[in-house]
Each structure stands twice: as structure tokens, then as C-alpha cells.
Length: 121
Image 1 (cartoon, rainbow, N blue to C red):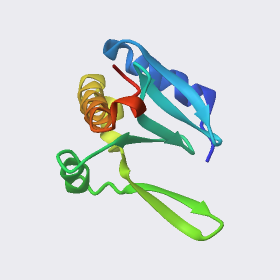
Image 2: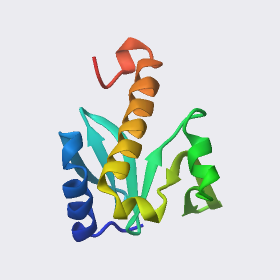
Image 3: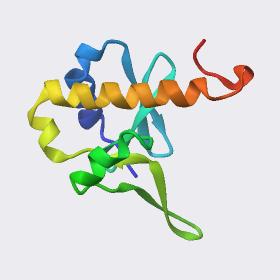
Image 4: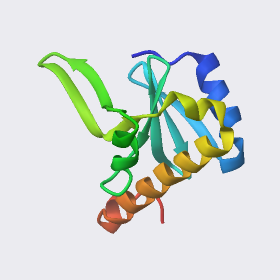
């Protein structure tokens, strides 16, 4: 579940137009954050974006699946993160649009939490 520094730097450069995006190492991979909210994760140099019921169909229509990892109990998936289609890496504007949608999903999820648990005020 590694995330190479080169891959992280490439993504941060590509997402520069979003402003304020940072990467933080976690569990061998990395999370992408904006304003303290994680909207993407990187595992084995693969990017996954946060989704909800409104954005998941866009990923499924492109044949993309959820983040899957190995645990002591076997393979598990995290349906709230879906793999990014490869062709987005060829179109920075489109990649930024998808990432902004993922950030909006993170904002909505944060707003749904009780005030004491919110990351963003």
C-alpha cells in the first residue's frame, strides 16, 4: 500500500489549480487533503477519490471500482473511495473537476457530522 514521493508530487502539481492541496502519509499510502478534509487517497501509486451516491455512478460508468485492501480478515473494500479513470491523467482540467467534486463530497460528509466532530467550521 505504498505511495511513492514522485507520484504524490506529480498529483500535487496537477492539482495546483485547486489550491491548498497537500499530501499526508498514512498507513503506507497517502491522503490528499484540502482545508483539513481528506478527499482522495493514494495506495500503490493508484489514486482513489471520495464518492457518495451522487458521484459513484460516474466512476461505475467508467468501469472503476472501490479501494480494496488486504486485512487480517481478508480482502476488504472501502466503497466511499473509487479508483480514478486513467485517462484523467491526460487531462489536468478534467482531473481537477473530478477532484473538486470529491472535495465537495468530503465537505458534505463533514457537514453531516455533529458540530463537535467536524473538521471544517
